[in-house]
Amino acid sequence: MPLKVSYPDTVVSQGFIYVHTQTGARFQAITVPLLRDKVDAYVKANGFVLNNEEFEDNICRNTPNCVCTEAIRGLGDIVHVVLNPISKVIDNMTGSNLQGCGGCAQRQANLNTLVPL
Image 1 (cartoon, rainbow, N blue to C red):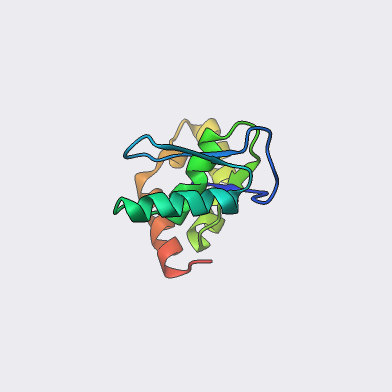
Image 2 (cartoon, rainbow, N blue to C red; image 1 turned 60 degrees about the horizontal axis):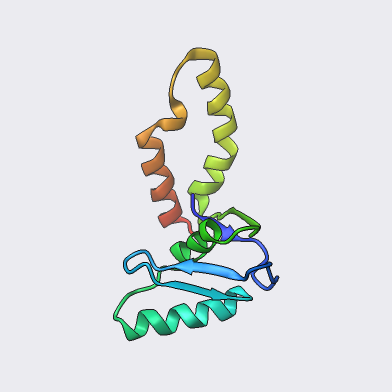
């Protein structure tokens, strides 16, 4: 699941950091909205498309001391959050691999598409 910035208006020590995945360009700003403005201008000027989920996930992975949580995108993520601890217990007891189920991941994505939040 992608990460989401928990407190986008909070200032972190060195500012929030975004690293553009295709070019490696690095952006920094004291709040997420200011960073978004910088990155938006860059991607528009260079013909790229900015994905909202990827944007926040990228910030979470590149900014030290940034508080992030897993983003809930839809019903599939809610089902995952509820059932994942149960599947972990079953995996530990039986040696199965329910947590790594590819079909489960596809159903999660389908449910997120059908019932987004």
